[in-house]
Length: 221
Image 1 (cartoon, helix red, strand yellow):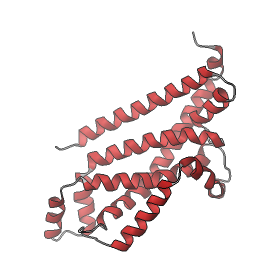
Image 2 (tube, rainbow, N blue to C red):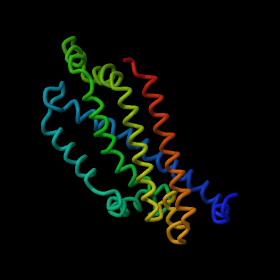
Image 3 (cartoon, rainbow, N blue to C red):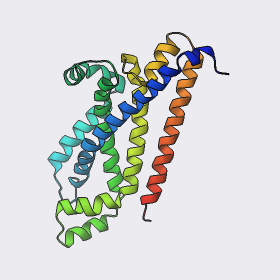
Image 4 (tube, rainbow, N blue to C red):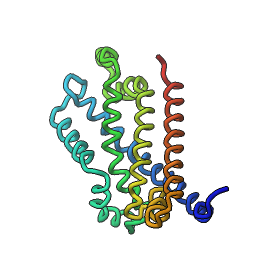
């Protein structure tokens, strides 16, 4: 039989879980749309590649590293004015999605860059030698060859965003983290705290399992 405190917050728990999914979904989509081009740019402008450009590489790399070096909880607070400007509020899952997106973009960009580095350089050189354009090399060589690694990058980024979303509860971002703080930490209810942790663990395990399955399905090796 479930403890009374847990039964009382079941509706809130259900709402909090879907808020977490909502936050992670929005920020992941933004991270992919913005972070993937940045990751590709970091790779193709590197020394010896077909779009080698040291200046762009350094500038983009510096910005990505700068954002990644800021702890998420500090980033969360620092971006409150931007969040207010974009969403009209600083609380709730939509507001938290702004900080999550900003944190997710550089993380995913570096993951994409690492994924592309796993490609055999000979394949790229062969594409250049037959006169393929940079866009064709990216579209028809780099992304297809790195597909399993890209899926794993999406999986790892998603898991990181789930962890970040739990921290967003500190500033009223909603989600499971917010529930754990309001009903567990502030009320000294260990049952609620343990329940939220178990939910997050199960959610992360499901994400990892799904990512592994898809990565194996698209792996041609």
